[in-house]
Amino acid sequence: MQLIRFLISVSWLRIVTIIVAGLVCGAANTYLLTLINGLVSPMPHPDNTIARFALTGLVVLVSGISSQILLIRLAQDAIFRLRSDLSSGVVSAPLAHLEGLGTHRLMTTLIEDVRSLSQAVTAIPSICIDVATIVGSFIFLVTVSGPIFAVTIAGTLVSIFCVEVFLTRVRNIYREARENEDVLIRSFQAVTLGIKELKLHRGRRRDFMNRHLLGTARSLREQNIDAGSKFSIAQGLGQTFQLATMALILFGIAKWLDLPRDVMVSYVLVTTFLSMPMQNFMHRIPDLLRGDVALKKIQAMELSLETAHDEELLPFTDRPAAAEARLELTNASYRYGGEASQPGLGPGGPPPPPGHRGGPPPDVNGRQWVSHRGKAGRPLPPGPPQGAPHGPPPDDDEDDSGFRLGPLDLVFEPGQITFVIGGNGSGKSTLAKLITGLYVPRTGSVSLNDERIDHENVEWFRQNSSAIFTDFHLFEDYLGFDRPGIDNEVRRYLEELEIAHKVTVQDGRLSTIALSQGQRKRLALLTTLLEDRQIVVFDEWAADQEPRFRDVFYKEILADLKRRRKTVIVITHDDRYFDIADQLIKLDFGRVVKSSVAQR
Image (cartoon, rainbow, N blue to C red):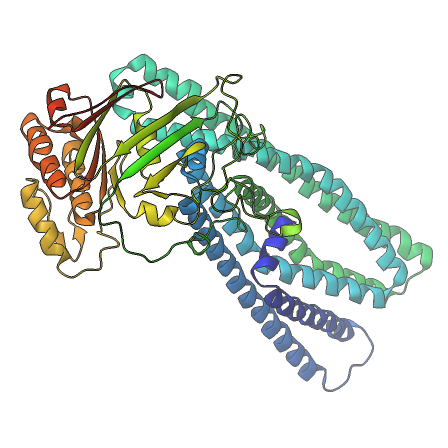
């Protein structure tokens, strides 16, 4: 089972310790059964039986508690590692890959799958104690009667086989239900983000609720009912076989072999002793099945436990940021694939290999996106060495699926304001992600001050850029600023950006970010000003500003950045301010259709 391999990967030494403690507990339970059997038999028992009973009970207690505590610690360490690896995987996975997966799938994995796996792992300690007790009871049964043991084992194996037939179907239903959870989370996102549109249109609201949200919820309900019902049948079938085996022994084997009464008393004692751990074990099976499905889903997302790209693996030289930034794109292009399947997107399977049509672009490290698990868990060799091409580009003449930006030959000079214009879907935001190193070009190169950006320096390159995208996120804390007096800097910028009456700062934490979109963009601008980096990118920043402050942005803030020799790139539709630009680039369907440099 995947869960067991998962726990072994966390700490095999602790697993061995737990197994030893479990064996001790099982052996003690077996001996305890022997003592109880001696006490209820008509034969006289030794004088120290009570002392041995108490000592054995103490061993059962200590070994049971010890193994449970060890397993609980191991389980929680495993869950912590899972959350840590998943979070690291999200942070360091290629941006395009995360965008392809979708927020709803990431959230389902980070919340629902982790919860299911946590429940399964938490159930393992008690399961191990139950298994140890069951094994010990069967060992004792061997000493009671060989024929009874053989019949009991045969009945148990037949029961397990029949139950497994149902459990296979239950496992498949849980797997299908897990796919529906992705769809349901996406519907929950839609109902929260689109609540205004739903309230304003009764028909849309009715169709959305009935056909999408509630439709998926009903399907999920039916799947869980179906799985629960089949498991109940399997559980009942197992109990029926146990009773049938008991009846066969009591009414058949006992008379046929003329077994003595004390043997039958011992058998009834063992059967009674086994009933509780057997029931507990059966009740935990659904948790184990859901946990197994969740773990497989996590690994299928290419954010698996072994694959997460640690920041330690991303080369980063602690070198000073560029004093000025001359940015150059040479024959650079980027392509979004068509509808190719991606890891975690359902039954379509993995995407084509990098460098093939429809395949993923290079990862954030400037290398091809590959699984580092390889065979038998061994890492695969990394992508091409430094300076090597990123792999054969797609044949654009043969494949017109997806969207392609470029090839582009552009230069952005320090102390220069560049406006990037064009219609929706023309590639402006994609260009911004190329400029900031979030996307790696499929062909060509990006250079900073004549230094080509590749796997070895892409992380350093990103530290030279600040960007405010249309889908920006605000953090309440000013993270990563360890210089003293940060609160005073923030207060000064709050005054300059005219939102000091709305927001205060204390110990690097903003009092609120629940503001209008225009005010939230000013807070994002504040962060950019604090970062003071050489490349500054604004993606339609002024779109939500009032006319007066929009004027301030174009005529004062941009002018100040230019005076400070920043390389400023502004994606905009505000044609009344085009005269401010030193360079104007117009994109259409991913190509530069107009590029002009102002003569000052």
